[in-house]
Image (tube, rainbow, N blue to C red; front, side):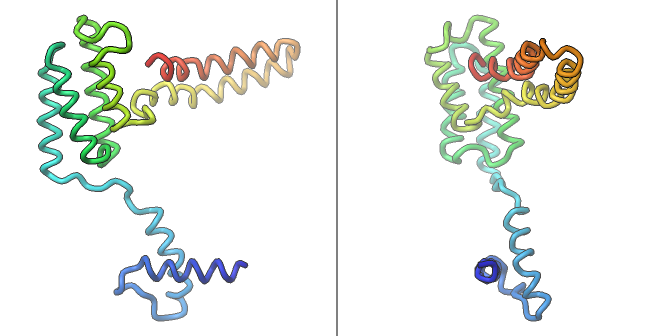
Length: 193
């Protein structure tokens, strides 16, 4: 079985390598699967954004920054159209930058009363469509609470170990409190963010 798997990996590695890099010697034949695996997994995942897309994105972002409660919907629609045409954003940096700007605009308009009341207005619906197109897993929005949960895990774990050793009868309560302390901000962001 292992030999068959190695032969398949070797054949795939030759197919993935450019013709100028096809191995000629024994060492090259042995190193080809590793090189192909590294080139496949280590390759940059994001495509480069072309200048026309970047120019359109910057124009739409500047329109969003200049918009108010009555014109923000057209700015969000323009960003949604760009994101839909490009199947999201071409890089994580652009995704994060765009979502931070849109979230900041949304928060500013909510504070001024220029955003939909409640959570089911037209602006909110278009915002959610844009978010699904650009950042479907809400990485930008949930990055802060997730970072805090990761950083807080160590102290909470050590505290729970201390409670388990010193006051075992309170461990269940402490465990529930520790889990709530770590995951409540994330859960709040997911449900009400």
